Amino acid sequence: MGKYLLRRILQMIPVVLGATLLVYALVFALPGDPVKAMFGDKPVNEAVAAQIRAEYNLDKPFIIQYLLFLRNAFTLNFGNTFAGQPVIGEIARAFPVTIKLAVMAFCFEAIFGVVFGIISGLKKGKWYDSVILIVSLLLISVPTFVTGFAGQYFLGVQWSLIPVTVSSNTTFTEMLFPAMVLGSVSMAYIIRLTRSEISSNIAQDYVRTARAKGMSNGSVMMRHVLRNSLIPVVTYLGQDLGALMGGAMITEQIFNIHGVGFLTYQSILKGEGNLVVSIVTILLLVFVICNLIVDMLYAALDPRIRYE
Amino acid sequence: MTDNNQNLYETLPGQERYVAPIEETPLQAVDKVDDSAPATSMWADAWRTLRKNPLFIISGLLIICVVFVALFPGVLTKQDPNYCNLDNSLSDPAAGHPFGYDMQGCDVFARTVYGTRTSLSVGLLTTIIVVLIGTLIGAVAGFFGGWVDALLSRIIDIFYSIPFLLGAIVVLQMFRTSSSIWKVVLVLALFGWVSTARIARGSVMEAKNLEFNTASTALGSTPIRNLFSHIIPNALAPIIVIGTTSLGSYIVSEATLSFLGVGLPTTTVSWGGDISQAQVNLMTNPMVLFYPSMALAITVLSFIMMGDAVKDALDPKSRTA
Image (cartoon, rainbow over all chains, first blue to last red; front, side, top):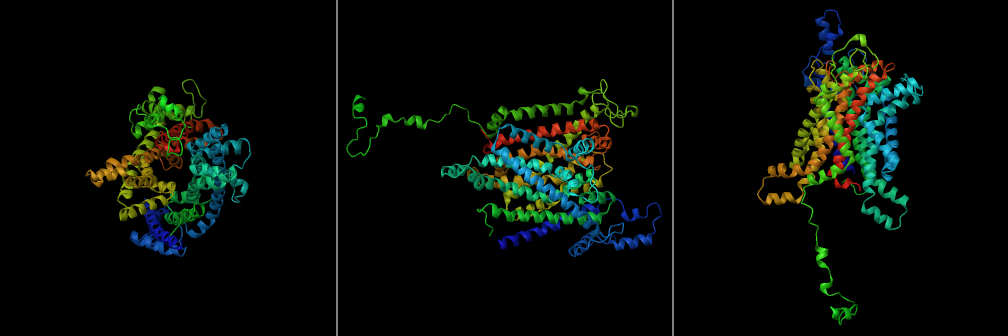
């Protein structure tokens, strides 16, 4: 187990380096000169511009810029935005909001996805199975921003059941509906995944054997069917936790939540490259670590898997 | 026979229990294999299953309709989607304009009809590129193994770990001025090929250990020939399934990018762009947003249902009675 963990962490290093390099290259290939933009309508003072370029390492070759960024990132020193704010401060303000939103969305999709998936998978062909299936298909095929707008319009504006936007307090009730919107598509995928896993596992020989031994129906379900069915679901959930943090962009935009997605989108539009790569680096780490945890969880769920 | 009947159930000397004479055992019936059905390939078998699946029939008909609208939008409406008259801004539906007008005074029905072509082209082109590149890279990684696999797998991991939407926005931001749909197609393909490659790699690794490869090698075929004429065709089923399903999700992604303002320019008639424009007047005229969203949802839904039906047909394990 320890050896396996070490190998996985070693494998993560080139992935994280490669991905940050790719993102860094993409972001800093953005057209437009941010230093020029800082002067607005005023004529560019070359001396000041050169000083700013030196301050942000923009005068150095690309690969040196990247290496300097990496060195600083290790000490969580991400430098300043072009507006003069420390990047780490902006991130520290935005991350708790998004983590809250993502964790709420994650709980929502995990609980409802698995529960509805089990109900649906065990009672295939019943009317509520059809209802669950149709609703999950609709959630997948309607884009999140339409679901968000529709909910905002009907539940928020027409029937005043939920707050229309989220204030800076980000209270639980305010965040509840945005979190549901954020988790809705994944929930639909989890329902479908759980349903197909349950219904294919239930037809397996080991289930018949367990029943033939005289095992009660509840035990067969809990110890055999569910345990085997949940392995792919756990994989999906693990990958999704990382994706939720980055995917909150649309939801945060609609409900005016000032989290990471909102900040990233704004900084891409403003050309704040430094902020963009810093956020993406952190998101990457979250994503890769989530995947690692999922792999470790496998061993707990499936005794056949042993890491040597 | 009478002789036999007489000592029926009587044990003969040296036997502990009665053994039926050989003529009485209908061995031929046990051996008989039903060869009345014609020999079929996996694809013919899948097609037979598909034809009987109502999910396939419904989604197939819907897809035919969507493709027809995309090819011949002029049949459904004589209106020019780009003819906009501010006098009609947000007007109610009228004769010949069943969906009313949007804020710019454009006919919503005409725009929804003409938007079909854009969305479908983006979905279709992206899927073709993704399936070609993903299958090729995944197959090479799975087939050759060793350092080739290690290298390609790390590249796949790198692309996989970058959040899709974030990467797409960053790249599209560079091509803001371009108005061609190819920029969206290429960006979606750039971040989309990884999932197909992963699946192709897995199923090629599975297919390459099957016995027909040994047989083919014994007959003198080269590994590359094995790869293209035996392994890839046998590993194709899961790739086709994910291709069909993700066609729908590319259409959604295009709409999302257009909604964020980095996708297609407003001069191109597209559902995502129209939904994004209609969002401003959501509180007063929700129907302007409803129609393109509905068209988008129906299109995506039919491709997902088609994917489900194809999956049921190609994967006998998931088939239910």
